[in-house]
Length: 126
Length: 106
Image (cartoon, rainbow over all chains, first blue to last red; front, side, top):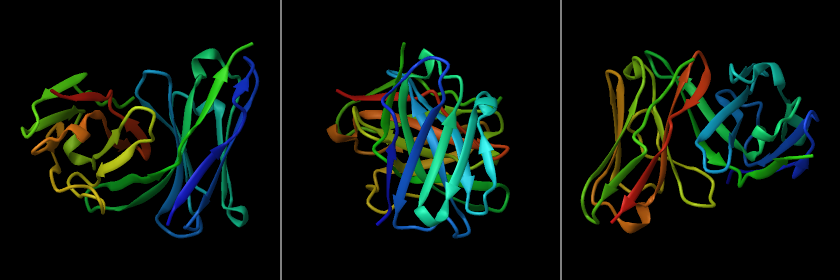
């Protein structure tokens, strides 16, 4: 059974750096075709994809947030860490991590997030 | 950047069919996924690789993807299907979510 759990501060001040940890079980991030992604959702808004780290340590970021995001993994601890710099009140959101599966579907690669954590709520305020 | 557009809301009577569209440039050349999110809960995958259902997802959920439009169809809609639904695709190995559709079962 795959589970993921997000952890981190609930309140950060503007301009600070946010560090979130995703601790998972039930799979290994050294297995081909597996990744862990981060997604956020501001209150009343749509889901927003943030970043993905692959089993081989390759990384992908949202183009609009790329300059502020860093994703890393610690395979021995079964953890993935997302840092976001220069936090602003508009970054107030629930942040989710998710087990991501990907592979070649012939004409394109497929990706999907089949298991999600419960999310952690982060408020940015002075 | 790549964008996916969904209708803000869809209303359906119990037992009827609900169709939710997701539009994006040449979306049919990509793989689409669909997620259901109920208030206060994490999203749940209901369709992946355009038309595949994960284990535990009822058969009334189906998907298709062609041209510029992916569609999620809920046949025989039940009250428990009332939720927000998001499509997702990937462009240059980065994820993109649709704008979301609120499905109301009247």
